[in-house]
Image (tube, rainbow, N blue to C red; front, side, top):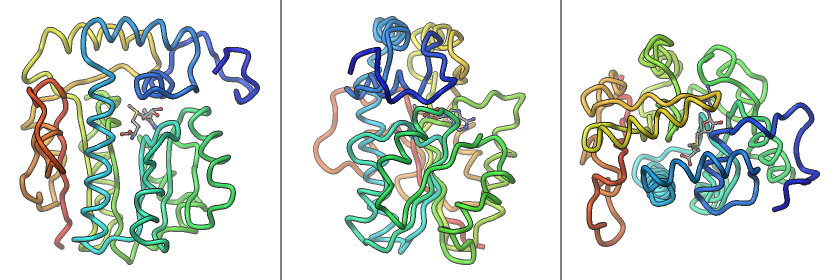
Length: 268
Ligand SMILES: C[S@@+](CC[C@H](N)C(=O)[O-])C[C@H]1O[C@@H](n2cnc3c(N)ncnc32)[C@H](O)[C@@H]1O
């Protein structure tokens, strides 16, 4: 995609790298600019971000299918949903069950503009421009309430998103606010960067992300498990992403995914 693209929403600063557009670049998408690619290439010198992005999307796919087929979930609130790409949550979910409803939430205008375009003909899915750090705004948004009935089981997805929330912003309280809005049998899906296995590489990558509006806070497995407070973790628990109910085979070194993931179900 050329950099004189007409699809850029007004007011978007294409000179400042955006984590949404860098992630799009890692996944081979076309909604990114020179500044995004420049920083993304530097990240790639430090961590295998293209592999990580692909592994993360694969985890997301498996988790959504699991929730529909084994937990009976039909409603999805996807926080930090990103620029639409192959295998979006609504595609996976509505393929399994066309009645599934999906609300995408992102604070990146490019992600939201493309979500809106993609979903024009889809009555059961929508995209809202909002900050996941403000649960009241997200949960009370007209579009959220149009498609999600919180008296029915709902999955909150936080995939590769919560590591953009700093410790001082209270990530556990943010997750808890979403949890408290959910009824029993609802779910939390989370994937999250970790420095457990390659602390130096992660520190170097995190340093690069300081040039974006979304610095990264990688966390230890124990901290990520704590975010599931109030949810029962489904087997195999919080594990390196390739190890969460893999469809086939295993990659050579799951630790290189640099991310943990898990699915919890709210029982009370
Ligand atoms: C690495 S992408 C992950 C996309 C998708 N969830 C996935 O797992 O494939 C992270 C996304 O989170 C979004 N994001 C970061 N901080 C956010 C915030 N405070 N509120 C809403 N979205 C946020 C970014 O704009 C970006 O689109």
